[in-house]
Image 1 (spheres, protein in one colour):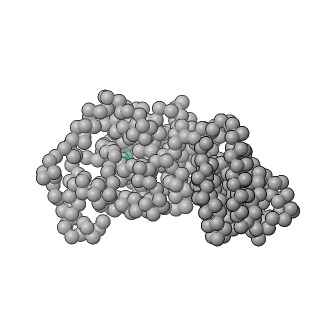
Image 2: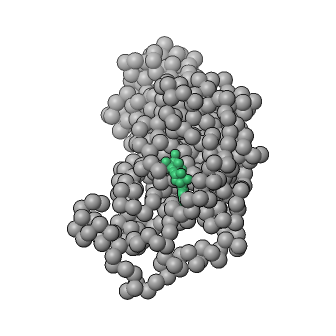
Image 3: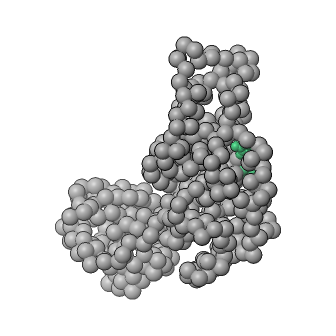
Length: 414
Ligand SMILES: Nc1ncnc2c1ncn2[C@@H]1O[C@H](COP(=O)(O)OP(=O)(O)O)[C@@H](O)[C@H]1O
Ligand SMILES: [Mg+2]
């Protein structure tokens, strides 16, 4: 049979170690996440939808049982197993009443543990719930403003050939509604406020349609409406959207604040946008280093150069070596075309689909969806890549980053 996935909420490190050891010694079980912070773990459980969650009850049993109740209501397909050193009939009864399906005495007794695993497997085999839709979350990010993330996010959202929602996470000063020529009445703040009672029709009333496939969840009109929005709310909102759209394209702020990190964590893909200037290259390198520290797999991140032009005298291989990552997209610099489309409130991929910018954005979209790039786009790209990387290695200008700034300054600067 398939492995059973587990999440553990423990009362301390020792208990976590003990339970983790018990799970590790059983080849039918797999631990997805563990920790002692219930509030942090809750959204993880909702997202991961494990087969079972082991919840340990310690000194604050009453509070933890409230958590069990919440979890049982939110994730009925997850078998909740309460575990405690106090195996009094009273606590066992209260655990079952809160929604637990089983009770495990601590310290773990091997035989009992095997029985609990078997009962969990039995419960899981009865779960015939159709899996919920889970759209792909794509964050378009740059830790430096002005690189064109909103422009790329909007066009990427319009390039997906499936129901897509754009989420404006610039909660203080979002402007995606302008990019799409929309005047939203509601915003993400309304969705957050009413998230507990969201159904399809209420959600539809909070997003604004741009085309039949593309909608916008706007940023609040007044900055102070965003004051009460917490990272866990964003997590929940993105989950709700993923259940209803094939693609959720997120345009976060240019800082590593908790809300942005919550969105980046949840994203399946991070399109990391930079322009070819030293401050942007350096902040991209810092972002990549942070992503490494956060444990993001490198395949989650795609680097896209915006406002690319042949005239930029930078050795791109050197930039890639410096970043330690390949650049996967080059969006042409074309100020008039970009600004016109923004002023018209119409993404270029729709208003001027044959433009070089639109062609490249569609290529990036296709690399995310895994669809083959249409043949009409292939040729110009070949030319573009040829222009960049086709030169023989010896011919690549050594000028690169260093001479742009003066030999020693460049290395020091980045
Ligand atoms: N490929 C491009 N060529 C020329 N101008 C661009 C391009 N992409 C974006 N811009 C311009 O850059 C400016 C900043 O873009 P925006 O998307 O608002 O950046 P960000 O969201 O990263 O702060 C806009 O005026 C936009 O027209
Ligand atoms: Mg922006």
